[in-house]
Every structure is written in structure tokens, then in C-alpha cells.
Length: 365
Image (cartoon, rainbow, N blue to C red; front, side, top):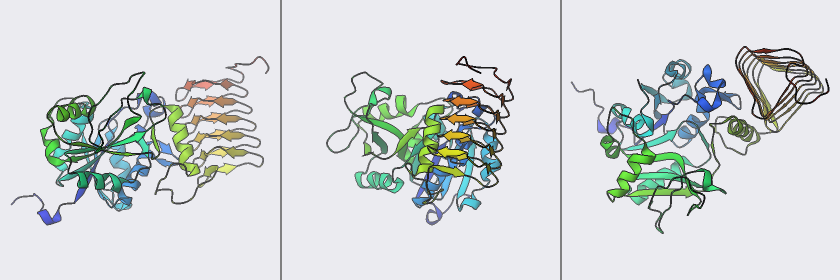
């Protein structure tokens, strides 16, 4: 008896989320957790994306995992708590974006497949991208966003009908401000054509190959919120934008303010929380502390008079009295002594202890 689902039982659209990356640019935070599982506005980043997928009426999702794959399934299970059906396909070795999509093919039964990069915070209406795909009759539809300075990205020019005409590498003189936003809609048959069992890049191999064959690659272009969450700076800004309501997330509802304090956290009198700061569960913020655009993970302690600006404080880490942390990542369980100064992209590995006055940029103590 065949296990293939009847056509009437198959979902109209399935979503694939690629979450296999190691997140090396966010180390040391990703030494213990995959990047999509790091708390962003107090909940795993992936939950924000799943909530957007669900809001578009899609509840059948396949996660393409690799690095620390068990963390995803341990947390989300079968997805029933979210009202979704989640399945997991794990890469035994890195396969790239195209290879990762091809690797989940056995779990795909719908004819229309929506694919997301799992490290992008976006605000576009997912249903609008699907509508563009359906109305255009394309083989693949790409979501493109317009950015103020496209030089740091590969750009994607289109013709008057919105068809993609080329995929261009980074250049100092880009011909368009449209960049690849990391969301795609595929006909299932196109995924079947991707070579199996080897690394494949959709950006460098699959999409240029489709254009060379004269296939129809359509663009859905908008000015929606978009941020690649791959660096500490972008992670901090993305989290703050979620808290302040600049980046939309159905997982947070309509609440937004200058700060978000989760249950069980303690905020002492005189502490100042601004700039989209997040304080995790069980964290403690001492009197007179100033947190501006800070991401404080669960159980962290910020002592009296400490200042945290645009920085991430890992699980259970501690900042001593009057410490200054700016544009810095503090790993899980690290202990930063009183009056230390950590600035300009510093990263402290998990469990490291720095004594009082142990690191300074200024001369006064």
C-alpha cells in the first residue's frame, strides 16, 4: 500500500526553512546554540519566522538542519504547540543553499514550495510573494528588496515585467538597488532538477542556470523591512527593531516599546532601559545600570552602575559594578569584573573571567 498522500490531502503550499549554518560570525554565542535558536526579543529567532509563515496560512514546514540539528527538534517537536506540522531533514555534510533545498525533496508533496533562509529577519507579506508567483506563472519567484546602498550585496536586475535578467556579484557601481532577500518560491519540478548529493548554490549555480536556459524567474520587489542577522551588530539591531515594533512579528503581537522585560527578571530602582533593550527570564539588572539597545539573555546579571550599549550578554553571564560594555558580545557564563571596559567589537568567550579593572580603554579607575 502506497504511503503517498492523496492529492486532496496534499498541502497547497509547503515551506522550507534552511537552518543548517554554523553561525560563525556570531561566535561565541553559536558555540552552544544554532543561530536561528538564539533569543531575539526574548524568543528563538526562528519562532518569529515561523509565525510569519503561519500568518500566511501555511502550516506544513520542513526544516533543513545540520549544525546542532537536535536543538531544533528538542525545542519545537512536531510543531503542534505552534499549530503547525514540522519535520526535519538533516544534512550529513554541508550542501549549500541549493543542495539543502534538494535534500528535503522527499518530504515535499506540494507543487508550490516556499523557501526561506533561516537567518533573515523580514517584514514582507509572505502571501504577496506567493500571489506574484501564481499570477506570473514563473518557474521560480524571488523576493527582492530595495536598499539604500546595494554595493555590499549581489544585485538582481529585472525587466519592465519584473522578470529577472541577471544575477550580479558585489560591485562598486551596481546597476540596480534590488538585492536578493533570501525568500524564494519554487515549482517542485525545479527542485527535482537540482543535482543531489553534492554542494549546490542557488545564487551561483541554480538561478544563473535557469536564466541561461531561458526559464522564467520572476521578482517580487518591495521596500519591506529586511535584515540579515548574521553579525552581532545586525543581531542587536534586529532584536531592538522587533521590540520597538519597527520589524513586525506575529509572535510578539502588537506590543512594542523601548524595552521588553521577560517574566522572572528583576529590575532595580534607578535602572534605565532604552533603545529596544531586552532582558531575559531570571536576569537581574542592578540599581543605576544603563542598558541601551542591549540583548540580555536569561539568567544574566548586570551589577549596579554598569552600562551596556548595543551589546549581547550571554546566558548566566555577569557584569560587575560600573563595567562598560559597548558593541561587544559576552559569552555564556562569562564574568566581567568591576569597572572593566569592553568596546568596539570585543568578544568574550564562555566562562572567561576578567578581574576588576582587568581591561580598560581609559586611564581612570
